[in-house]
Image (cartoon, rainbow, N blue to C red; front, side):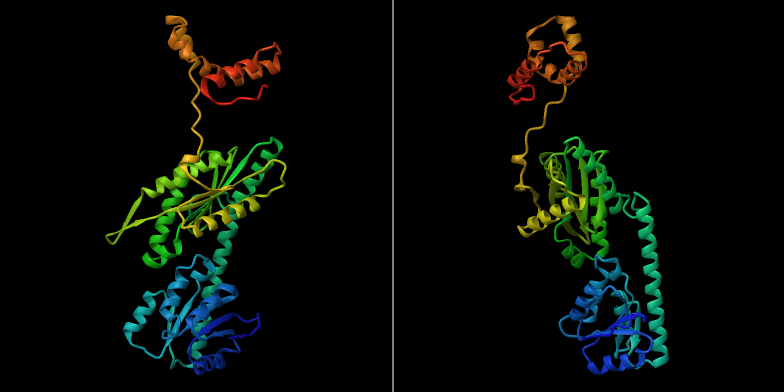
Length: 393
């Protein structure tokens, strides 16, 4: 591998197992391009992952470890936009039409014969790097637009930048009022395998399906953004670990029941969800909470996936508290009292009626102190529902 560092020139990556071919191309283009070279597709792929300055790729087809077709598939299905939009030229000594068609079908931007002349080679590479610059300018414009707008035009969800901004405000509010804020990271299990097996377009349809489900099932005050393809973050104010866990379990259950069909093959997807909640007295940030949730996703997927991971490990439906009883209708109780008096049926509803009225009685006592027996009423609710209430002791 060679790594020239003249960043005043556009950088290209040449991948070919023939040292003579690489040397020949470099000799022709080194005055116009900064060149990196690799000996096979696997080494070339690793270079693409770590070098964001590469603007175009020239690759051979027949190579050890990973051939040109395999490399093209990885590039076009990458979750990094800087990689999946890269111009790629296939260079081959086999100039048969079917080879060109196969290369184009695999995602090649251009096809170059190894017998190409120097002037034409330079012209082709100039066109490829110009295409790369145009694509990057477009990506930067889209990123700037997304930062200025709270909504990602592609997904219809919040942008990651807006999610951080809004969640930071909610976190400050929770800290001032001793409240809670939860963060969920939701990730599709084995998403890379879905891309490899069914193609990027099928994986994108699955990703879009999940984003729509998230958008329709969340509360109005929650915020969801797509962090990466197949990975979402949800910020929920005034939500405890158990509340976030209950929602995550319902979401996983709903996804488990969805069956998609592609070319007569049934596709089922599963989710792993990592949870993190703000803690009173700790100066946490939204980035920290998302990072904790991501670590819990990773541990859940390492354990086999299809899990919800909280602060104490995996959460299951059996661990979730029973949902609270809904408030009773005071109007209906009063109508019943007028119609039939304080009968046995009405007396059974008194603990629920007191539970519904307690917040109002609290307010009355705080504004107009009159000695209301709040502690005694709380004990009535506790005895009638089996739920411990110690606030007024």
